[in-house]
Amino acid sequence: ILAQALDVRPVKLAWSCAAMDFQEVLKRVSHVINSEVVSNPKEIPPLDEDYDVMAASVRIKPKDDIMNAGLDSLVTVAIVSRLWRLYPNNMPCEPAFFFYYPTIEAIATIMHQGTDTSEPMRPEHVDPFPPKYRPFVPQKPELMPFSQLTGTAVPSVWRPLHLETKDGIRRQSDGMQCILIPGADVNIGGGTMEDARCNEQPTHPVRLSSFLMDIEPVSVGSYVRFLNLATPPPTEVELLDWCLLRPNDKRRCHVPIVRRQDRWQVKDLVPENWPMILVSWYGANAYSLWVHGKDWRDYKSSAESFLPTEAQWEYAARGKDPKDFPWGRGEDTDLLNVCWDLKTHLENAEAPPPLHQLPLEPVNLTKGQSPFGLRGMAGNVWQWCRDFYDPDFYSSKLASCEDAWNFTEGDFRSERGGSWVGPAALARSSFRRGRCPEAKGRCLGFRCCAPASYFSDKSSA
Image (cartoon, rainbow, N blue to C red; front, side, top):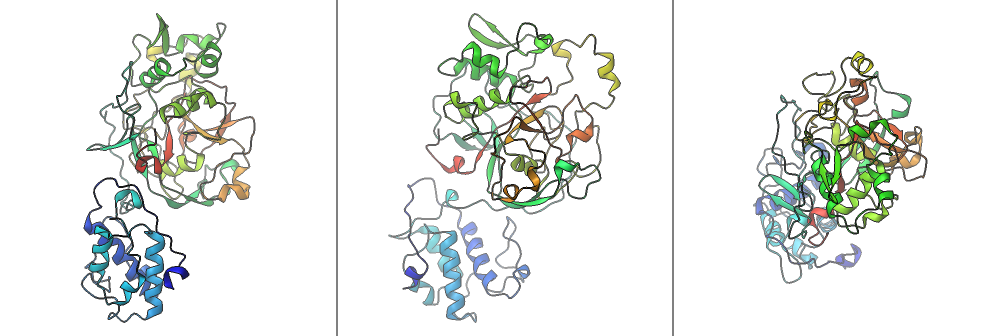
């Protein structure tokens, strides 16, 4: 009867990797049960990596049975309901088990080991613990190892698309390291910051699901590899849509790639770990589709895209609440690659510097680093987002929907992050603007983003 009342339909998942650590399962069960027995849930410590099942504030300890801890049947039903909805694949199918005086430890053991009718709890069944909040203290920039694949290297296996390594999550199709950003209720917009513009208001709540974000922008070397491996090979029309300029365009000298003997290469003197620039929204979207195993020929549509939404980008840049920069307030010359003296551009207007002397910085340099460890989230190059740009979007009901993004078609696409060309004010985390999707800029690049399910899905590529 209880199972019917809860509308329980256990779903069997494919047998996969090793079971989750028992202590992690114990923490989750303890937190659910103890949250139900207090009048004020704030009395219970948050469920994060440091949650202690033996803490003084945790009333029911692992070896306490839940029925003798002063719970009545309704509270027990509430506990069963919550556990079942959170972990439907890992619960014993006999709800009466919970009325036989089990301890928290016994419940966690069954969920950890599984039964004939349920699976052992596994990491892909649940969202990861949110990290314990710690004030973000930016470090001095340093050059990190460069993991993106370049040249014509072809991985032998793309399944799973994302692989967990000792260094983190790695996308096998291009070697990009990805960060799993935890889902959260976030506040998007300029908040009360003095510099916030009208199009950054009103600040509004958005519930975001967890997602994977590239740790850094896509490099020139990786983009060249895409052009060489994409099948069928892109046509001249498509290349002009993406990353080439017409013969009369004065910026052609700054295109960072060149075709030699039917193969694309990074131009001489250009570092492979520079961000790809002079790439349109179409060219960014084509790469994002290809690298996630999709048909890149749908590059003009955002119906399926692996570019971050504006909300995802802003949250990944500075956390759940508005801040000027990833580290808080203050324009820091050590942490931002922006233009600190606009006179520089005036002096170079007639004779711009050679390509290799542009003040770009490697994507694997820890400048503009976010609290989540993402590099280049403030300055260096602007980054394309999935959304159609609308200066009034934040005033719409759509802006506060779950996993909100602006899919209402318009003439412009959104870009975020600021760059080496503009002042620091444009690199603020909430600063937003748009360009036509055909636009290409010497200060404009991109990074990719994917639902968290792409990490747990073993056949996603």
